[in-house]
Image (cartoon, rainbow, N blue to C red; front, side, top):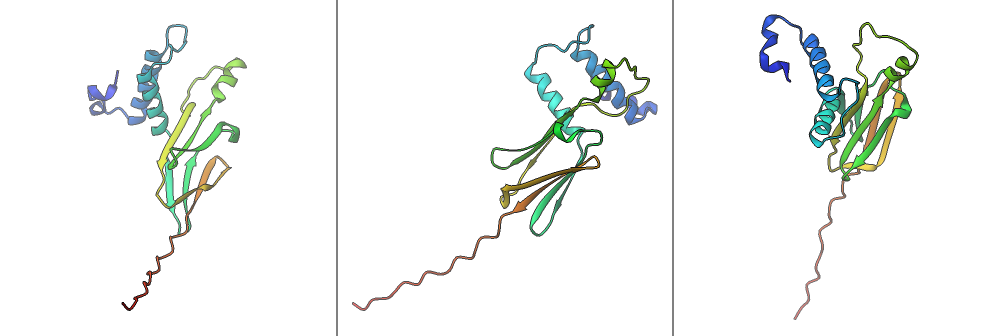
Length: 167
């Protein structure tokens, strides 16, 4: 169920509250009464991936010699972040924040939960001049910075001189 279809924002409800309610309804749709997720279904996987992408904002900068992708990921351990290149030109940043499971094992009960847990992912189509062999990822203070070096510009083609023969 999508609350946006009911026009609840017209009743003065804050978008953040609507988002939280929507997440709760989505969880209820995706789990049985015991809290177990159903077997993986392609549509649910697509929706989950779309939500993970929407929940991972990022900045992209272009420098003279590189492209830099910056994503805030507070509370995520570096070991839980994966940076890959798919199809030779798609940069994929993904991972999972699993802090909630640890707390549940320790008997902690949440009274309010606003920080997002679960999977996150972003995909970026790289420009043709991106050097996928020269990628560097640094995670510091909850911020991931991925630098993709640019390929050097191609050298201008020199004109070919053809010798003219006398017949």
